Length: 64
Image: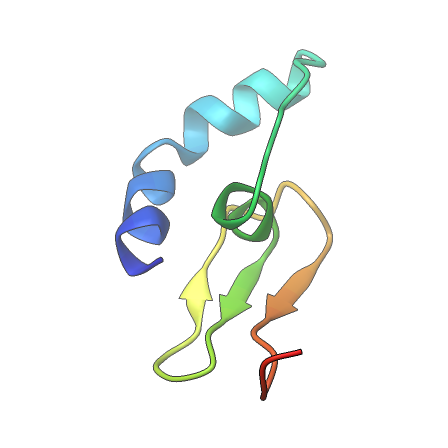
């Protein structure tokens, strides 16, 4: 997830430009979480998202 966060930060400007031109996105798991403002894993530091979606996500504290 940390690698995905770093990767999406490198693509943030292109993603914002695509969103501004009404491009449709398919975002699953890390892609969806990191299109928001941030993701808080069960352990470790909060990971920065790109802020295209007005949401914050966090891992569950236990398996469901």
